[in-house]
Length: 532
Ligand code: G4P
Image (cartoon, rainbow, N blue to C red):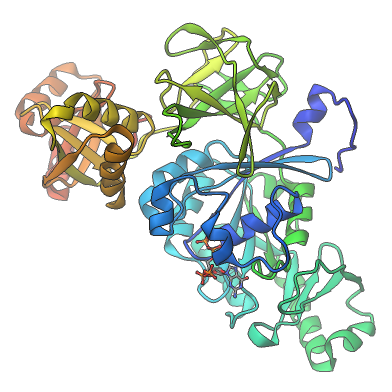
């Protein structure tokens, strides 16, 4: 579908033309570079000539936080919207660093599809594997971009085998590389039956040469030997891999694969065009109460991310709301479902690359930023009155724990406020020990402890210190058998804590202890995510 450009679009057309997706990869595979190139297509950023990634990185449009600059890893998840060929594209950027995986998991709940970037020399790496698990859980359609073909790469068949095996998804190459490294000549696009020739260091977007594989012009373009190899390999491709079927892609069962070089802007446009053609427009969302379809008349949405102080001059937070249904309008009363109160938003913002601007309306698939002074938590829903609670935003069982203590007695209020707000943002989880009343921070990555300390100091003027605590895992417990539950809580008093919502959490200090507890208390369920 190529949406027509019209001045006035119907509600349904607005939904149809939206593509909201995330780019995921292991750090360094080229996610930032690919994002920047996609933004260039949309004219959302303008960088003259060759885009050097280190140059871009310094002004990276996808990184809001100071800490990011210090560490060179993408901490914040940001949103980049742009228009291209009549489509409204929303890219949700995700931190690649594993310590921020939870942020990424949550962002994946707000996307309708995903592009996975894989380094052609390294293949599937740890972080990609983990993120793909989240996509699989949600049947998110994925397209794979095998990047850095301009560098010595692995055999494409090898890479495809690895993707199938490690990411547990069927693959279908829609483009095929001709050589790699210094011998990289380009790709043959099976989808379009076009040959794209690669010219290193030339950033102009070349037109494909429309050419059937059997055409003898192929020899003229890439030489006899490479033409022979290409034909052989593609024969094998057609023999081995299933036909590309859009319905299987949409069901999250089949991943089309493209090859290219993001740095050289090679293969990116083909990827983008295919993506626009096949990727889903906003899909239904699941609330506890029912399924919510995007084309329902009434507005609904949920908060999947909260970010504090993106602009250091304003201390406000921004709640990122994914619109699930209906037509969102500025200055209109909507219900904050958890608080049960009506709220009006006078300055909702849209994110167009690095710029934020106030908008009057938004449609399903869009992400809007709502300035917030503390009303929102991750997972909160907004509606036109109906009690909808959107699912799929669990907290994950943390694995690293430390006691957090106030290091500056004059600033205890600031510390409490800072901790509270950072937890609302989902930076980490706070547990209060039922045994000694001390506060325990649980995270999925070690870096979060530093982020918390840094942010408490820079955003709240509070200083904290950590003390070690030896814990293995935190899990949420529940049972129908209240007597057994009470007995467990009494016996394990030393290891019991409450989470932010007052739910019971068992802090096991070893795998053995957890196994024993499960063995001995058969009627108690131990959960590793907060949503059960
Ligand atoms: P990430 O967001 O997934 O972490 O990766 P990023 O885009 O930052 O890319 C990581 C490195 O890989 C960068 O180099 C980038 O220039 C390089 N890169 C990305 N795409 C390609 C490609 O198609 N070919 C080649 N040869 N390199 C590519 P760096 O040295 O870490 O940074 P910089 O100093 O070049 O910016």
